[in-house]
Length: 592
Image 1 (cartoon, rainbow, N blue to C red):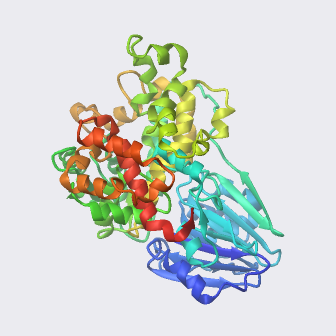
Image 2: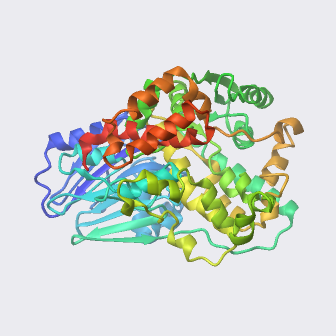
Image 3: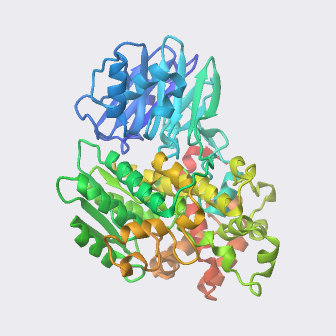
């Protein structure tokens, strides 16, 4: 895992060595082991490296040993050994054993089509010094980030994190209030936007070409419905095979690999299938929430069964400073309640290993959430309007919103910032069923915007690489096209995964009620430490968010929660509190 940086254009002479080093310093946690810079007349490439594969000769940016092209790369290519054999047969000669050089040669052979051959998580840029052409790309699910902007001289600047763009010394952010409105709806910024009007992303599964001061972006992959007739039994065996292969590929490294083990279905299955590929007991890690939500007994049970080297951690309920540290690291507002425990766990894990497997993506692929069957279970008496007049997708969209459209009219000082554009065009224009739209939203918005952002930032904040076998694209393409009832029904969510896990773990373990990884927000907010913080940050006229949000409306919510016991406001207060903390720690980077 690494941090990447680049600048290209006709007038890059304003960028000093001090500017470049300052930007790279901000990426040092993503890559503490090495750093490098390559300069050309019209391009500067930089990189900070977390050494995982080919520890001795994987230095970057890497120049090709034959062509006048250079790459800066963040990620892992899991099929790099297979690609190397194919390319050697075509006459390519390699100077290293790194997956970085594989990308260079694959690009030479296939051009823009190289991405169809790469299996992994990645964000990279290749500079062709002869053609003065920059090729940039991002992996299929958006596991690795890629931000870019333009300076006052119309040079393109890109980096793994927004903070590196600011540290270059050439730009300042301009707040996008419509993106803030999306955050107030979802708890995160949709993955095709940023919090800034003048900073952009290369979307997941897309590549970009910058040439002659012109940028073109093109999508190279998407999930498509291609129903394949297959029996349930054969589908289950195919999933077992594809998931096992996905895990085997992700066990490739020149350092030790561990695994997150929450005690849930997904992480337990990943760990169980990974253990045979390790020469010694895998180090596994789990976190508990003291007396609030404690799955540690299940994690310990799984560790004993799989025979791992298990380590546990308890998250306390008064760690306000740690939460502030997390939010300061996030380049954009992000209020997933599991951000904080994910940070604690990643920090804990990074003391033992450099790489950890996770179960991210399983719920999204295998319809593991209650909202997939929610509409079926609504009573006519309690939910008549939704049951009769809304389809399941619209009902789902209404249900996931933190602040409702009506509440946001009272919340915003300027109602023109209210923005409904948090559903991407792929979903809007599709002719699939409502349940399929929910699934596509989860896979293209919730997964990259919420879960993968959390995993990447909290991992990289601690120089830990997180690998997610469930979002292997071969597995995802197959599962996406299975009948819904193969994945879940009204009583058993993630049906196939539970059956596979049930071959090694007891029924009580496999079929217990899902708890999830989210923190007990309501309980935490009621503790004196957090309660005092809420009043100190939000019950004051000087709060930063009161420059655009209504002070009295927010204070009324706080009173209703703390004085009247109205629990429905707990997440709303949490989202506003996280937003205020974000503004407190980032306002030096932007103008309002």
